[in-house]
Image (tube, rainbow over all chains, first blue to last red; front, side, top):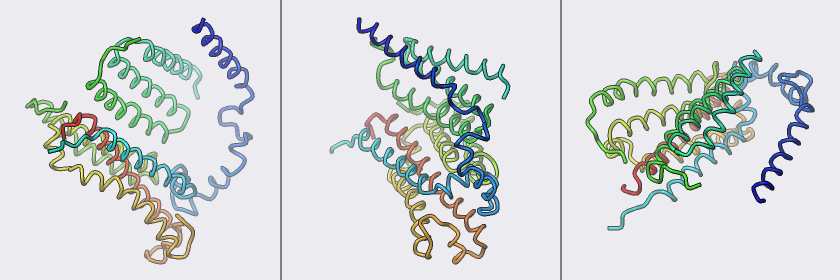
Length: 92
Length: 81
Length: 146
């Protein structure tokens, strides 16, 4: 019974996801909301403003630098947490 | 974007994903998960997101497989369920 | 887990491969402005070369060269470089992480200063990611014996 209930919930969720997929914009659509808001400005101005031809790096480290700083801190805190969890000092 | 290549890659991603969940040996599961990451890397390269593909190839297929193998070495190799 | 096994083929291959992996990691870091790549991928490559060193040789020999204390210092030092560049921009009169004001202390224009700021930030990310992954692998492989 529990297995059947789980199967039912999974199938309903999959049906809803598949039903809503055709509403999403197409692959690389220039009229989709993601590529009409700020993307054209970055594509036009990134090279002359930062002298970085790779726009991905310019957005990641310059325009969205605060975001990448948080990401680096997440990596740092994850490393410290792994050290505190896994490292066992021998008491002599 | 070539739809034949896309179809083959998506089918292989589906097969490796289901195989990694259903196989009994955890070491084989870790290796199949590495193959899954590599196929996702190929899919992203084919869609034009080369930076994401590079990250997936180094982190997913390289280092995380080593971490899984090191964790399995200290625990058990068989699943309970 | 990791003990010395005196296998000539593995040790020679590791000796040959590790310098090339580290040189490729630096290539990925510095060519991140022109081609795919950057700090995160380069850091993972540095960590992969050090993990190969631990697997091919033993753990004690590696931690003698790359000690755990130095590892933790690198882990925090990368974040320090990143946040330090951001604070330096505030001290020079700009906003946080606005690299164009770095042209006041560097002999370049504001556009090149932004490119150099991106490079400094990526170096910080690389150091943090490499030290974090290596410390996780050391703790997994040592199993509490260190």
